Structure formats: structure tokens, C-alpha cells
Length: 357
Length: 215
Image (cartoon, rainbow over all chains, first blue to last red; front, side):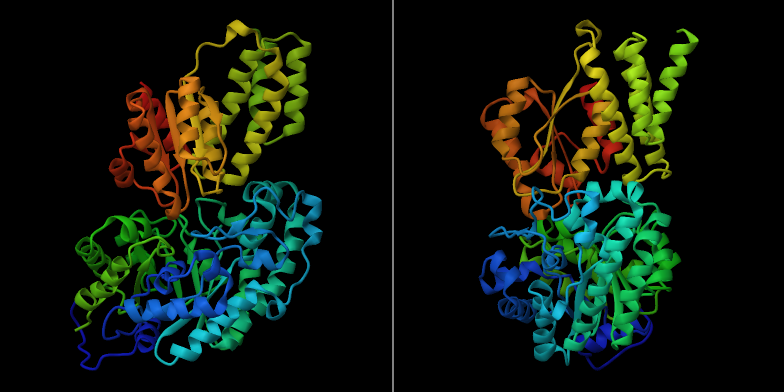
């Protein structure tokens, strides 16, 4: 990489902030979405990690100490919000928590009315995430990015109704779905605000269905776009930055920017309409900062550290024309069972190949 | 083919494509009332409709909700017509055992593959979600399956796929079945590493892969 040369090493927070402003930091920031995998650093089980904010915070801090990533992301699992709305959640000892698929809260389309406003600050699991944000911010918020996390309202609803039934209800009972999404959004607005107030610098919204692998763009815009905008506006009103994650194939970048206007998008595949990463970088790389795009499974479970460093070099070079606006990351959460040395290799790649001179 | 029957099949196809379950019920009952061959109605009507829905899915006219609605319409028609199939009208179908590996309950991808394979003429045994490796092997042996199709969305459960291959080898029956894998974290490289016969990135690809492997 050529161009400017920075003699003084930045803090992680400075590095991330600079990249988000399309200015060149000392080197490419690296944030491999290292979340659930941190339970193994502290030596606790996944179910404990998922339900104990204090231990989760300690785990993430310990992982940060070992790995040295530039930002924390407080993704616990995708059932956090749904659990507080009353959905039964199963917590496997060594894997991610998930809703009981045999006991959805919303058993038919008439049940959407069961979704009632929940105050995140008085809830169990959302409060836990708020506390994790607070703990991380207190410990490392001065020098490391703290990115909170919220599952999009339609995603939250799917955790209570089941994906297939929800998707069919979008066609059969759109008004009932929209009512529930609206109520969920009220809670998510507060959830986002509380994370920023607890000290998170940003909250990452995950509107999982905003890609061509799931919904037509117009369908997503109808059922989640305006609701995500309310959450994004609340994040900005609270003084935070809006980031967005979607690991689906063919994310609708234009619609995401229209409704969320995030400073960065964490993604695993090129945007809808782009066939290659090179095309993506050329079309979108200077419009919104990309966080990506290591394949989590191959990075965490397959590749050697040397292969990872080479893979990351390619990614950094792909986005080298974006004036610093790129964050090296996995395209989705780093595998909870992944090799910690692989995450360290990503950080090393940033130091070797990501220096802006 | 008489004009009326042709029209009836076309209407059945269109009802599936238009996600109109009520109309499928009316038309399927008409098939029975008019003593039209049920197999032909399934083959030329319902299956053609689902085939068209699959095309629209590939062309990004339809997405997952629309495809699910079409499949509901198709299955509604199948429920009505299947009891009226003559035993001799169905030839031997190639068999697929499909499921989501143990520890994982995400099944929408698996369901889409099942629907597309079923409408492409394969006989499907769907073991559902959270399926232990031994159950895939036992079922495949019991029904003399041709394909074992494994799905997972989670990295923590990927190893279950390798365990299925290991069990097949251990029982010395690996060469009796083709094993295909798919799901969010799965790749062609992973499939190769665990000794699977193929990987598909989506439902349409899974159908092509299955046909290729069994050709």
C-alpha cells in the first residue's frame, strides 16, 4: 500500500474512527466479529457466556487482550430480543442459543397481537447486552471500539413465529406482521438508545432479510426498511454511529443506505448487483465503509495462519482504493468453535499488509 | 391430449405459480370428479407449476416467501391427488435422505432443497432437524437411498457431516450412497475435505448436483 505515512501508532478506537471517516489510519483496522468464541478464552461454557453479562464481558476483555482486535461487537445470539418478548430459548452447553422450534410464541397468524412492548432496561437478555456494552466501554472504551448489536425487527419476529411461517405471513397477513414489527421496533429503539447510553460507540443493526437470498427488495423495504430507520435515527440521536451487518448473499446496499444510512456495512458477499469483490469495491467502496470479508468457516476452521494472512492481504488490496475506508473482518461472526490463532492471524495480517504509507 | 385436460393441467400449473391454494383445491377435485389421471395432473400440472416457480426464483422474480407459498399450493394439491394415484403409474424413483445435522435446527434451506428435489421427481425421506449421524446412515441403508443430503447453518455442527461420512466408511457402505452437503458455512473445499461427493450453494444447484451425481 502506498500514500501517507503515519509514524505514531493509533489506538484501536482512533484507527476505527479514522477509517469510518474515509481517512487513512496508521493501518487497516481489524475487527473479526469475535463474540461467542470468547467463552473459550475464559474457560466457561457457551450457555453460561450467553446468560451472564459479567462473565461475557470478562471473556470478551480476555479475548481482546490475547487477540488484540480493534473493536468489540456485542452479538450474543439472535434470540436475545425474542427471549424478552416471551419466546422460549434453548441454550446448548457448547453452542449458540436458539428458540425452541417446537414451541414458538406465535403459533398462528392471529397470535401477532401477543407481541407487547418490552422495556429493554427492565428485561433480562437485552439488559444483559446493555450491561456488556457498559462493561466493555468502562474497561476499554477509551481506546477500543465498542459496537453494540441489535437483531432487526423482522428477524426478531421470525424468532417467535418461525422463518417459514413468517415469510408466508408476509403475503397472507401483511397487516398483522406490520403491527408486530412496529411494536418490536418501539422496544428496539430503546434497546439501541440504552446501548449507546451505556457507552457503546456504535450499534450494529442486523436486518438479516435485506438481501436477495431471502426477500425481494421491495418486500424488505415495506416490512423492515422504515422500522430500521427509526432504530438508526435513535442511535444517531443518542450520539452513536450506525453500523449494519448482513451475512446474506446479495445485500441491497442501496436500500440499506436509503433507510439506515450506516457508516459501515459488515458483509460476507459482494452487494446485490456486483459479481466480484473488485466490482463491489469500485461501486460501493467509497460510498460506505465495508467490514469484511473473510469467510468465517474457512478462516476459523480450515486455513493455516499463513493462508489467512495471504487471504487478508488480498482483501486489503481489493479495498486499497477506498482512501482508508475499509475494516478487515470476518463476513459473519467468527466461529464460536474456531481456532483462536486464526483470529490472531487476521490481526497480524492488518499489521503486515494494512499499513498506510 | 384432449383440450379440456390440457386446460385443466395448465390451470393447475398457474394456480401453483400464483400461490392460489383455494384454486388448487378446486382444480384438484375437478381432476378426480372428471376421472382424469391423477399422476398426469401431478406431473403436468402441480410439478410444472413448481418447476416454473423454481425458474422464477432463479430469475429473482420470486424469492423465498413466494417459493414457500407455491410449495404450499403444490402440497395441497398433492394431498388431494395422491390417494387417487394408480399403483402402476409411478416408476421407480431415485431416493434421497435429507436432514439438518445434529445440534442445528435451522431448516429453511433444507426444506427448499427438499421441495425442489421432490418436484424434480426424487423420492424424499426428510429426517427433519437435529438429526444424529447414525440416523442418516441407518435410514439410507433401510430404504436403499441413492443420496444422503446434509444441511447445516452453523459452524459448531459442521463436524456432524464428516461423522456421517465416517460412519458410512466404517460400515463399509460408503460406495452405496452419494453424500451431498450444503448450508451457510459450507463450501466446496469443506465438502472435499470431509469426503463428500458434492456441495451446492442453493436449492437449484442441489437439484443439478443430484442429477449429475446420479446420471
